[in-house]
Length: 442
Image (cartoon, rainbow, N blue to C red; front, side):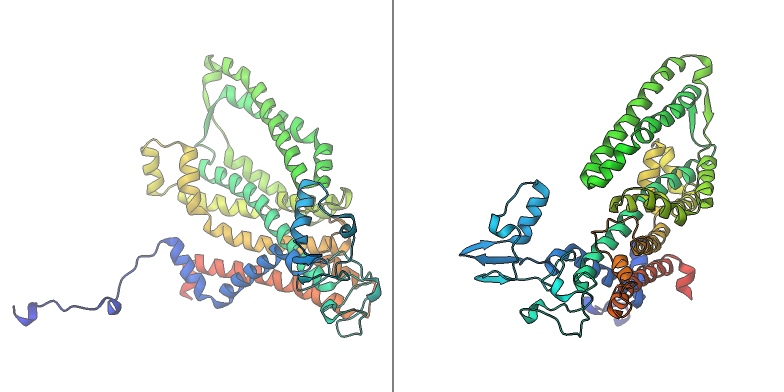
């Protein structure tokens, strides 16, 4: 075989391969090139780990200990007691100071104080470098105490759980509302969705009547359930949803008879985009911050109320992003092909159009988490919204007002708020740069 026809063998490790990235892989590769945003993502993951393991990092009981020859897991026992509602402690251990017990051995958290625990020996406001009244060096308050003797580091660790929970849950609520409304507005527009006159004339009033009976008349029951706890609120919320469905179905039943008439069976267009766009404009015109502060000040203090109010009032930006993306996606070839195959509009919208429209929404979600954490910190700083017994970064920062010389009460909580808000903002900017090819070219 002539030499010019021989195929040269290139080892696999030296062969240059052309890889075709999917849009998601391309965005991820572009995001990783932004070192600051990539570091922010890892740091947010670290903070989430701290929030999840807060009880194992700062608690007034050991993680595991041996007492009189018996191995005890105090933190897990407290978990079980809180969930089951049954007492699991011996009388001598229920209110005992575990730091003073004669334990055979024990594995303690990093900080041996709970955030709400009062150390009256180190009150009011002992600094991190001041002399502290402690039995052993392990009991030291590493970042000092507040006016009531509560450990600042324990408050920061457990406050991260509150801040991240408020940020993620409230943005989850706003994302659920905004994505659904934006998807319907962008996909259907004002001329794509058609229903019979009977369905329109009975379905819409039935839905409004169901919302009235399910939520407005049960607002006090929902408020009481909200103050009792998360699971109580979820149960009451499911009851309200059931009432809405039942009332809507009862009002909608006569429409089946009306559909048999010529007038009732005629199909009409539903102005989905116009209605949702006007609703978005109304919500934008409301003073959202003032509304949040007003509701939080009037209602009974509850962390779940704060999350719900922030979520319900901050969905407009997500809805507008989703609507804009759906307006572009709905005219693409693969959507037309899905319609030609006979797929239903809901299947096309949720399984094909919506997954390809969520990339810009992630940017709004990242900025929304930062905004929600800032709002929650402001509410806690003013002493409204969150129960007084709940230690948050805002409540720690508020304690600095009554202790002007306690610099650590202002520096450490303020630094925590600044760092977390900055991290989510940098994360949002990194996602925006990775998603937009024009910004990558720069």
